[in-house]
Length: 356
Image (cartoon, rainbow, N blue to C red; front, top):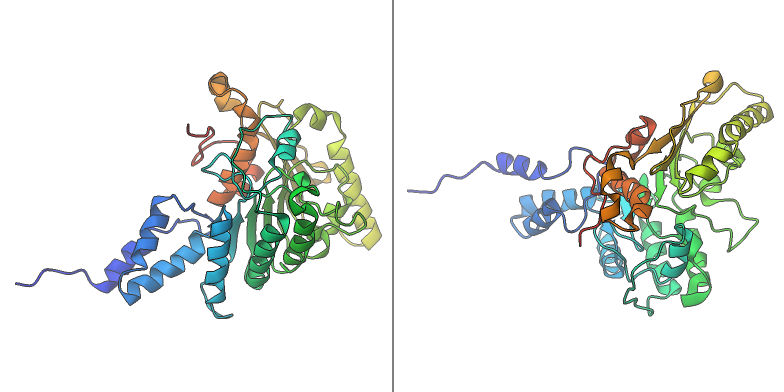
């Protein structure tokens, strides 16, 4: 008597259910669904094809040089019109969502200083991972995915890069790669303002000059000079981590934003653009009233630390990273824009403290 078997259609539906319901979610390599899909690529052709498609769609999570190399090699095997070419990508070469530090970003000391003087634990850094090596790998991947990439999340703070470990070469190699992303619609840089100004102070920011379809932008500490932001006509949302609530509340953020909107409208002699949303994310910050002057903009302050105040003492110094962890994990869940625009700092689906 033969063993009962499931129809292939049912098997494929079960495999499809492994993928996140939100197509913008990016799963880490340690996630159970990622491991299961990877194993399924070794089964039959039909199963392997679907598993491979879902891996490319939901698991492009690169947080080491080895993963960069493997991903770049795999990309070379895809035809230009292959439907598996990724529209989402995470480059987490500094501080992954499931590891304290990466060996791939050897400028970690300056990053520590940038995060309010917080001290990072020592790390066995691979100093052979020079800027030219990292830059060449990242550039080749960005150039390859440029035609299809719509959404990019990075954690590789450019503000920490200096001339040590070939940092100048890194910036020179990265800029052409990011310039090529002409179809990018959403970009998140965790805890960093993502500027190539040290390379060329007169050059416009990449997101101003090279990304005509950009709608949503998330950066670290940003200037309150909003003219470059408003000049990007497609941009409707900026989410930024202030890391300093007192400084934020003492600056004329709302007035500066409204002035930039008015100047842009007058210079172009046109009707008001679509409403613009500016969201500052911080932890343990004072409440801030939502303002919508002239119905042309909203300015929100999202506090991600309120529900964690009772547990801060048990994680000495770790609260410094709450904002950054919230933003990265929400971005990888594909929920950053909705949560920030709703003024919600909830931790649903996220883990605030690193596992020890």
